Image (cartoon, rainbow over all chains, first blue to last red):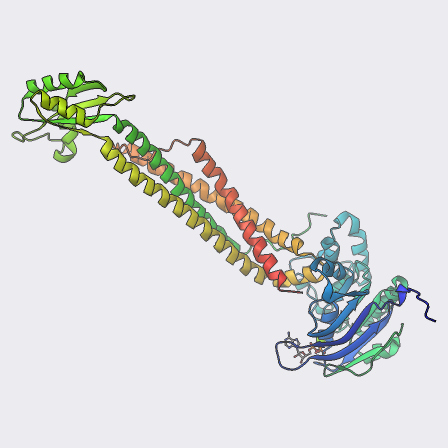
Length: 237
Length: 289
Ligand SMILES: Nc1ncnc2c1ncn2[C@@H]1O[C@H](COP(=O)(O)OP(=O)(O)OP(=O)(O)O)[C@@H](O)[C@H]1O
Ligand SMILES: [Mg+2]
């Protein structure tokens, strides 16, 4: 006998079914990807350069639509949603882009505060939070510096702070420690871990860094030429 | 902490160029509108005045005969006044053709009777002619209204042309702004993308551009409007001080309608800019997921 027990916590935060992606070129960059990430899971995504890591993450943070298959985020099928609903989902996602994408005319403080401003919050309400987070990533003295005045590693930390500031339900990071020294890298991953444990943030991080992957003992998704070779289902952190 | 930096960077060189173009278009539109209105008003006043006038040309008679003829005309129903033009009046009338030296001796001059008709029931040229013929005069009467009707037609055409010019300039301004917004959007694609991915709704992003272009349109429109006013004033002033006698000289009365044109232009430019910006931004965002 089947008993119906709705258990929303088991609804995957991220679910990809038969997802393929093709750019304007002939070949699939991603083919038949199936992934389920439990809420509060911590997953690494790895693979050689050009394997399709960034492309997969772009699908997850709703920058692209898949060529085939469907994507569910927080239980909602993204292909069926209206533009406003997609925007609302994006506000629940924090993204660290591989190329940072900071706004050059804004200060470090303003870049970090951007998601809050987009969500309609006033500076008085978030000022302390933003300053604290920037201090935590070691940029307490550079609040008013603009990206061109910051080193690559400093810019990366601003980008990380921006992704974390609104305590997202899903954090997507593309090579978030590519430009920082091993010490800072470890600190950043510890912060991600803390966020994952304390706030139950679902996290997926693309990285080449095998030391970090080994050290953190989290599930690993491996892409090879657009095909997922280690499929992870319902694994928590 | 000071005011937050606007999400769209402050204006760049492209926007300065756009400012100039919009200001120039508004300048031309206001100039066209003010000139057309001034000319139209002056011409209308002139034709209204001319409408009540008639000239009678007398042949084969002398000054005394002319006075008699004028008396006959004066006695007709529908005539306000009638008087034979004096030598001095004729000279003044013909001065443009003969210059200040006066009319040379021996040039035969016709005898003319200037007639003012009654406004309520004007006598027509036919009545005047036949009354004079019956009295034995060889006379031709001509109502000036004939010319006025032609002038009216010309004015109607002028008005349509002026409206056409204003409409064309407005459409051009909108097209130019739409084009410029598109360019601005492409130049700011990085910012638009980041805002979009941070969960900003289309209306939020469109609003940034709308606000920017609304202010630009408003300022450019005001600049164009004020310069057009200055130029029109200058043209009229210089024409007047040169002692031009033309009754068709545009009149810069600055009445309610002129002021309305001056006030509406910047607002219209602002709204057009804002509308074009919203359309362009929304359209290009729709192309993204
Ligand atoms: N916009 C695009 N148009 C066409 N092809 C693209 C586009 N973006 C990426 N590709 C191609 O898709 C493939 C996967 O690229 P992707 O950036 O996802 O790889 P990656 O695994 O993130 O690589 P890296 O480790 O170097 O960042 C590559 O062959 C790349 O050339
Ligand atoms: Mg990549």
